[in-house]
Length: 486
Image: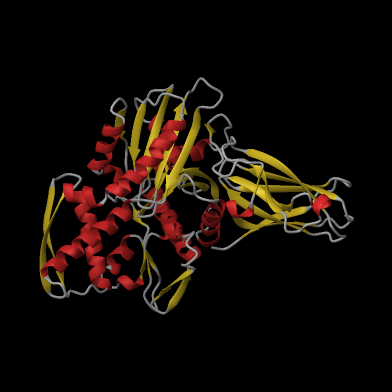
C-alpha cells in the first residue's frame, strides 16, 4: 500500500486510498499525531500524544515545531535530559511513529495490503532543495520509510478538493493553507480533458503559521498576568502551561466572541479575559503578511479564480474568512477539510505519481553553477558569476546543461551550486544561496582543457538528479552533490 503523509509543524497525519476514497490511517477518534518529541534519561523517546502528555510535567525535555527548525543554522541539535539528539533523529523519529501508527490502522481495518510500499510526503510550497533532501534522508535512514516523492502542501490540498464528491472540473482555485509553521498559497487548475489533469499556475509561501499566532497569545496572557502581579516570573513549566492555554484560547475564539478563564502559576490563580476583537488586533500584521502572498499570486495570474479554498487548521479562524470577504468579495470562499486535505491529496498523488498526465507543477527555484566570467579575456579569478542551469517557473521535470573545462589533468571536478529566485542567465553570487558542491569523478582519461557536459534535472518532487559526460571521449562520470549542512 502506498500512503500519503502530511508531515506538519504541529500535527502529522497518514492517509491512504481505501476503496478509491482517501481516508486517514489513525486510531478511532484521534485528530492527528502531534509532531512532538520527548526524552527522559534512561527511557526510550516518546513521540506524539505520549510526548505531549509527559511534556506537561517536564517541558524542558520536549522538542516541538521541528519542521521549522530544519533550516535554522543556529539550532544544530537538541540537548534533552543529558542526551544530544540531531534534527535528523527527531524528524526521523516522528516519521517512524507516523509509519507505525499507519501500520496499526491498516492491520486494525484488515485491509488487503498489510504493508507500506512507500510514501509521498507533503512539504511547504517553497521548501528548499536542502530541506527536501533532509526530510527524505531522515525518513529513509531513521524511519525506514521509502520516500516515493514529495508534493507541495497547497497542491496536495487542491488535488484532494478536486477529487472530493461533487467537485466540479474545468475550474481554477486559489488554495490558502495556513498551517502550524507556514502559510502556503497555490493557484491550481483542474481540467480532465487536457493533457495534464492538474496544472499548478503558481505557488508561494511565508514562514508564518499558527504557532506565530500562539506566541502572540502567550505574550498577551502573560501581560494580563503581570497587570495583576507585576513581579511574576514564568519558568519552563509555566510557559508550557500558558502555551496550552493560548492554543485553547485560539480555538475557542473561532467559535465565540470572548474567552474567560484563569491560569494557575506558582500557586496563584490569575483571571483573564480575551475578546476576539483583541485577538484579531494583536495578530493583524501576521494575517496581512499572508494576504500579501495571496495578493501577489493573484495579481500575476491571468486566469479567473473560481473559488478560494481554505485548508490548514489555522484557517478556521474567523479573521481569515473576513479578510478574504473584504479583499475579494466576488470570489466564493470554501473551507475544505482543514485538517485532512493535505494528507488526502498526498495519498491520491501517491497512487498517480508515475502518470505524466496527472500533475503539472513548476520549479520553485533557479539553480546555477559558479564559474569565472570571461577568464580567457580578463585572466581574473575574482570575476565569479552564477550561470543559471535551471530556471524558476520551469515545468517539472526540467533539465539544463552546463559545460566546464578542466584547467589541469586532474580527473575530479568540483562545481559550486547556487539556489535562488533569480531568473537572469548570469548573476552575482551574493544574489543567491550557496547550497553545496557538485563533484564529478572518474574521468581518468581527461586532459587539460577537456570539457565536461553536466546535465542537471529537477524531478517532479523538486529533487536534483545529475549526469556528467566527457565531451571528447563520450565517457560518463560519477557525479553527486554534497549539500551544505544547516
